[in-house]
Image (cartoon, rainbow, N blue to C red; front, side, top):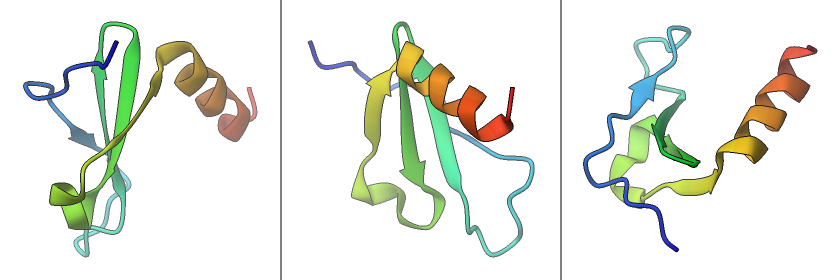
Length: 62
């Protein structure tokens, strides 16, 4: 199954500076997607929500 992110709201981190050097994240049931803020037309990478949650825990040190 390919998750549908066509109507998903991508959100930018509050740490993003004016230069747009960040990524955006969107969530749909069971999946999360990440895309480059400066090149939104380049598409996104979708991963299972559990994997994304594990990634966030590992980088946050929790």
